[in-house]
Length: 294
Image (cartoon, rainbow, N blue to C red; front, side, top):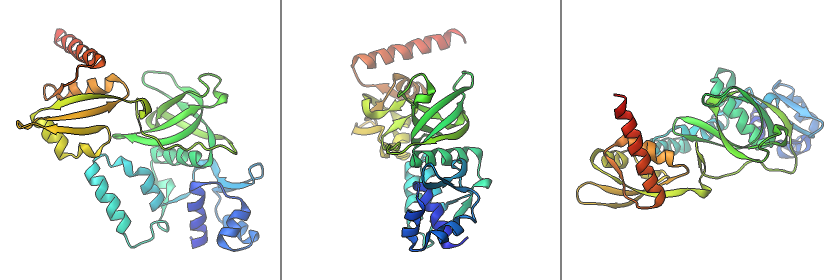
């Protein structure tokens, strides 16, 4: 694949381009741009938009650089993630020129790439989605952001007017529940993409905080695994008996309950707020129900 064609793939990955814009970027005539793009059956021209875009939002090729930037957060260990980012930045090869054949990728990778391009191109999507213990639903969405919460990838979305209900409502969709997605309409004069912090339970703009105390193995684990590189946990202090106090940021109390129950009795709640007391009561109730069925 020639360098001009490679760069066109990389540019369209990030945004829509008119023929004139590409002509100006490469300092060649519009006819040359047209002839270059004819070699790629996955790039189409929309007269309505006056722009080139990828057919079905899925290019035949993505550069290693774009793939790595999109999926680097799948490295859930923050220490190893830093190493990979540093190594990648120091490679002598131009990572924008190393192209990956998307036909050889998993369906999950393809869907995430499609959603990412939809965000960059401001494209409304129709998705078939199956939630936990819920029947398949057809939804019309404006995708806003892609993020991972551990091993699961999500997209933050806003329901489009075509959805007919919950219009304008924000939520997170797990990609493992997205059975299919397809482009509906490319919108002009809007910007879908946002940069915010999220988890599976929502946006952190209204996040709550709770103080926890970590004992023995939990304390050692959090320090060893670099959990304080994660903005969800803030180190507060260390006690002489190998205990540490931390602050946890969360959206719903279920997040705290899951963590504390996972580590019982190595993590305790060191907080007297009303919600903290409710969380303690919920954990007690869960424990009593658990031992009652043994």
